[in-house]
Image 1 (cartoon, helix red, strand yellow):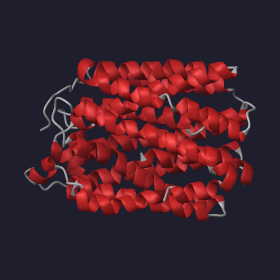
Image 2 (spheres, helix red, strand yellow):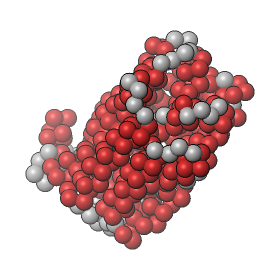
Image 3 (cartoon, rainbow, N blue to C red):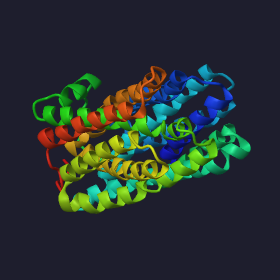
Image 4 (tube, rainbow, N blue to C red):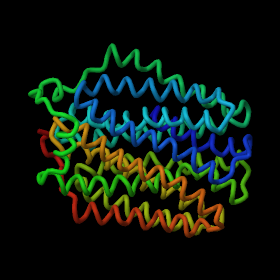
Length: 380
């Protein structure tokens, strides 16, 4: 929830900063992309660290990092200082997400693991709703700086976690085998895991590339289409509500139909919704397509977070999930930049969202032809 609140606030802050600092489309794109550069490095580094020192320690470290850096970004007066702090925010976010899903995966029985991890990820929707509410009520009245200060508050949650959160039993009880970083990375591409790793890298890249390209730009898209800043924030809030049934339906289906079916189906729905949103002309079609985009995309995210840790044994689970997320974050770097550069070059949203549709379809094919079903299998 805190992760999503931070990412969600950024999408609204970008729209507000564009007005305050007279940003170009390219500069707006860089704000989203620098966040993803940090997320790529954070996912890679903190994933490796979690397999070395434990899930709980890294989880707390990343929580404090992204919360404090986000709060400090409220004090910046230049784009460069803002970008530097957003890089640190991204590093914390990127590390925390795969480590949290790994910790929960290792703490739940096989028969309900997928459902519980998707429900964990459903709080991403709650965070986006919080961000949209803060943006709607706080930014117009008090400014974007106050909104960012609010995002520093989750750092205090680390105190509670330190006292009450147990670490993963599987991590604590595993036979400790000393492996270098190079050996762990090499294992991901060993014959036993090569196909799984390739599948995850393709899907993560496609999903993150399209998600950050589309969702970080949603409020700005509405403004560019002629709606006021406050109305745009309100419309995006309504679209965001569709994320919750997206998650809950995926959580209900994932133990019944399996990971592959849910992931491929929801990605396909995302692709069609992206195409519809990019070509929408009226407010009604924008809202309906945006709601379906939220529904299918976030359901796919939940399934992907459930699916990823199940591909690897305990010794390299956080590493495998972290590296896959890092590959995805590379896509998150290019997504917002692509939108900014194509808008500057005069391309319409139909072309831009068509590119995201095509990328997601590549992910669908990867799941179908390279994916291995892991429904209710015991983790090793």
